[in-house]
Length: 401
Ligand code: AMP
Ligand code: MG
Image 1 (cartoon, helix red, strand yellow):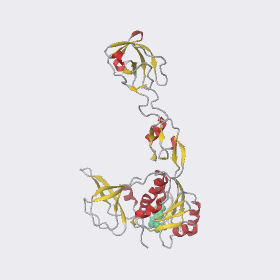
Image 2 (cartoon, helix red, strand yellow; image 1 turned 90 degrees about the vertical axis):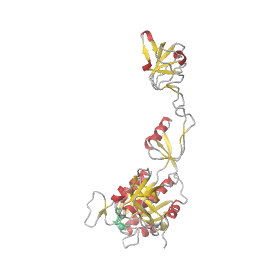
Image 3 (tube, protein in one colour; image 1 turned 90 degrees about the horizontal axis):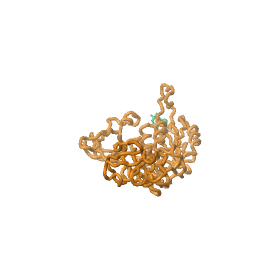
Image 4 (cartoon, helix red, strand yellow; image 1 turned 30 degrees about the vertical axis):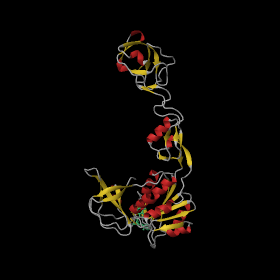
């Protein structure tokens, strides 16, 4: 059976995928969520002409020539404006964020004023009209689109929404990702591995990645290499939007995932991808559920998740597809490639001329998580790429999870 090219696999996974419904979520829970509808301002900010400084609200024409003596007739503080109206020759003590009194059109900073007896103040420097005044609507005006959609919300977005008096935002429901790890050899971190056992790391990395991308994760733990146990776990995960399994994806005597998925009503769409690492990746659907069968090797699992789970989560969240490849120069020669698309772990540094330089790690075994952690990018080598020399331009995929 011919291996499926990466791009075709991705297109098949994304076929017909629609964004999940929107829900209203309070601002404090919006970080990282994806805005479903644009946020429009329902008010001006600032809502009134206010002072940008501590000083004296004046009529600029009164202090065109200085020094000029004015009579202070009251105070305007933040939250407590001055009710009256300024007449020529008068001023009002004012503080940052306080509303401008009627009649005043500028603020003299307090450093340029000498306060004297009987509420008389001497202004030492002239001001222009509107100087040190924040006009109503300076920041934004009613009806302005403040946050476009779709948008993954960050701290500044949330601050702006709060300033616009929005207590909650309309965001996409988080896709639910169920995780199942398979393997008799696996024990949880912190456990006591037997002589033939290793510590399971896939579900931890995948959970973190999926959450970073905006998913809610349910971890169904480790399942032994046993058909019935695998079917039971797959059955329990039926409600998730996406089921992700790791391990057992080949056809060895101890690989039961494909059969268990089929017995559980999953229609396998394709299996085996023309890529390295990650060849045994499989994909299927069960009613509305997407099922991603990842290989067990940690680097293969994570690279497949980056290539296939991320675009699926993005699509469910209503985010546009992103072409994340950027160019870099090779820091070392590379051999010609075979029929599979390679994703080669590499460090990325900046050359003195500002160009990115990608340097592949010598060993690329898909069990090696340390080099995966230390890598900053994957060099993407298309099928049949010819041998490349140091300095040749290649595409890289930044590792940002
Ligand atoms: P499999 O795909 O089940 O044949 O597993 C391939 C390799 O990945 C084997 O060496 C497994 O021990 C290893 N492996 C499988 N699952 C995990 C896991 N959850 N964490 C770390 N290594 C794993
Ligand atoms: Mg296994």
